[in-house]
Image (cartoon, rainbow, N blue to C red; front, side, top):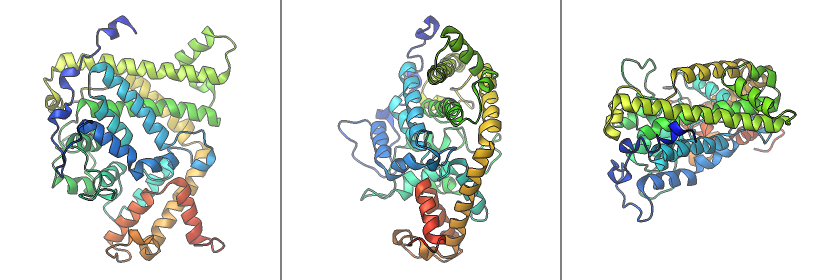
Length: 397
């Protein structure tokens, strides 16, 4: 470890969320004798159905394209690993950060970004669709595993971090309206939408950026969407790849990519530590509540790393997310989601019986929300199979 980084170990301990001081759960429960409130949140997330389904939900590639590309599950595990490491070093609560990292993608639809875009279009006239709001719906309403409540009854800190990990949802800097699912829940359980979240939630958010930048480079190279020469022209990534190649002449491509990506992650992690502790010394928050009241994020990249991050995202957008191969695949995915939504909205009786409990009128707002919940929970494979069952006369229903 670099000497100047070693000196920063435990620097944020004073602003860590203390599970003994948690604001509690919406439905009061006796807490476990062997686990903290945040450990229990993490465990509930891991054991819920929505988390298991992440195994067959993709981010860029459809699952049938290959079994070596990242899924929402592998991505969430990578985010959790980075978040835990950062929190452990800085003295923050790693259990809370891990819970948030594992839960942050629960609300994503099948077929990655393409599926979400299609469902947003379908729901435009029905109060919209937002994956972050859908995550909240899952952990407060849609998971039905416990006798005393719907959802997972997570702690206030976990719900706050899940909803606000990217920053406040209300305020002068916010241009998008707050999704209805969040405002409805907030009316009965105030998550303080106008403040920043805990340092742990901010760690989970920046860990998400670090993880998907690195693994999209990896998956894009693996899929042949761009070349090593393309990557070597980038800031940050380019110098690292060239240094590894120069230091190890003749190294095989797989090892070069893996070691270089590991170095990229390490460089971004180190930057987060240096920049966040710089802000800590400047802003001097006394505790976790003071972090929420700062009016600006405590955790983040330096200006230099922000520029590197922006360049990498622009590269991936042009060379990966809008690649012809991905465009054709996502076009199919969008059609599947649109077809399913239109049919099930018009004929909600085609949904499984447990999705029709309480009765729903075709074309109604209630029907649209129920159909959106049903489709959003689908894995890539289930959505394709359901489309075939409903639209292909040769396939048994």
